[in-house]
Image 1 (spheres, rainbow, N blue to C red):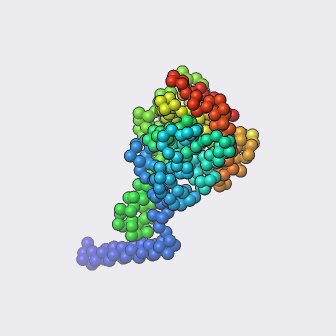
Image 2: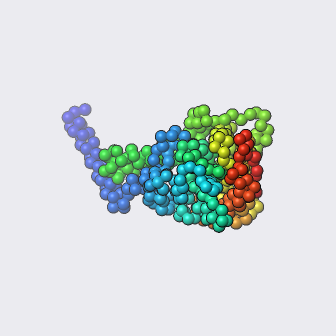
Image 3: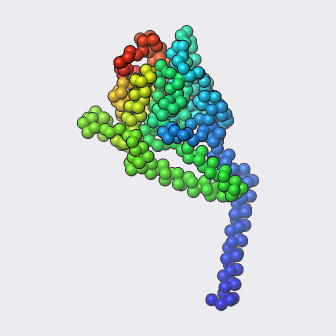
Length: 386
């Protein structure tokens, strides 16, 4: 190539680069004019409300004293690191219930006063006896994280009862909260991302693709097995009732996750770990199963998944509490917090849950008063409440 050819090639390259710079400049200006700000969009209060946890099973936790707008509602975290009534560590002079759970229990998209833990406290207060309900729910948690948080943060409160608010997707990996925290921290330390809206947009787009692949890999058998190595209890080949239920599961999500022996094994591990704590610390456990909000008055596709959760709870002596029929009677669509949200019940749904829990707690107090809940060698006998 002669000098003229080289100059022509260089000229074309410069023209391409200039066009690219102009295009990027226009895109940058457009993003700024429209108010695009990835930090604001990503944060949504999460980096203010959540922080990574030093406990590997907890993964992330609420920031004590934090407040802000997050998960579609105004949030205030008390000085002890949970939402709502604070309580004091040590034995309570009455009946104390600790509620564990995910975003449903925490109260995403709802004011504090509409959450079932808050409503339960109000209902029990009307009985005249002394009760305290502490809400340790954290958005995105699964059952293993909830048990780990109980060990790590909540046991000093000496509960008489632990309520586990169980969502059907708790059996898999379904939360990106830790990823969000880490991404915001990473973006904030990068000078280019701090300055350029276009760089933020490109990075966020590629991150979304990467995270979707990460979620897919973690929820496949090999990835799930590696993620929870040492935290998956074995299932016996002779467990005919369980195996039969697993074969009967429909293809619909999240029921299809219950076909996995690894996922059920991790649920079993979490329940066994919680049962050991219950025996040692002398508290009762009830598993509250929150339905997937997809059914009419006559059908519900995830009944078998409920049966598996109840079977696993019964193995370790836990009570189970169902609100499925109550929800179906009210109409599942009437209980959705938004038309497309199949996970989070609205205030009416939370009230139904609170009413069912209040009846359960009052029954427990009637037949097993706090002073006689346990003997030295006693363990709870499972009962199922319709």
